[in-house]
Image (cartoon, rainbow, N blue to C red; front, side, top):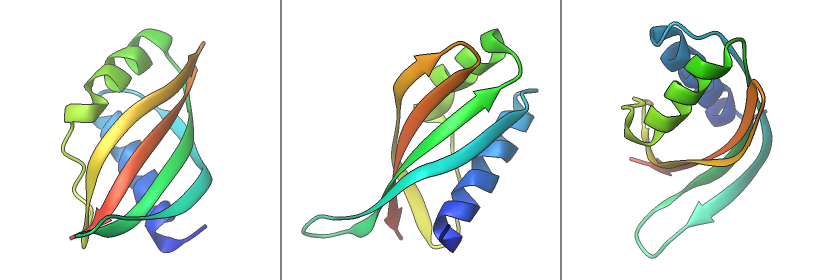
Length: 96
């Protein structure tokens, strides 16, 4: 796992904890990403939560949550798949 992926997982856990939710998070895919002006990575992350209702609330709020990441910013966060007590999300992380 790259340091970026490690930091994103730690950031997601901290964010969930702030919402009284404990999660397990694992990067299942990391792909380089670039546009004409920016470079970064697209991370696909598997999330498992202890409480389905709180996980729902956190996932719904995730696109609007400020996720401060040194030297980078989370440009987008999207739920790709939702299962009982689990989800797969995709984050676009861009170098600042």
